[in-house]
Length: 201
Image (tube, rainbow, N blue to C red):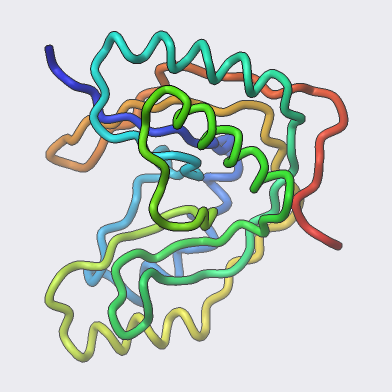
């Protein structure tokens, strides 16, 4: 039986993905081939990475997620600043932050508790909501490292407006020669009553 590599995430609407690409274009030009850039269609906010899962486990997983998330209100997101994991001295992941507060944190806790109840291990690291824009290559030269430092210091992304999150997806990830292919296996709607904001004005 072949396993499926899956994760639970918030999918972004196409017009937001387009804005992200437009606003990060300068960053890509400045950094260039020092990073591998994420395809626009793959941009998402990960809530829980599950890893390799057997096909028979998908049905109870989706049933539990649907039941729990149907009780959770829709939320509003606002995207924020650029950042890097783990640090500027050892850059690995270029990301765009999400201005997160209690409702998003609560949503992630619900997902975490639901999966833990099905036997999945809890995440070792605290939840840090973000959108991965690019992955820095290994063995950076001193010049490339300086380019990354300079780019993050001069380029900020502050997208206007709010993003309504009305559902959570279970995605399958398949590695392809040109990069991963993400396929939504299941969509769990959130309650449409009184969307909650996760940032302060």
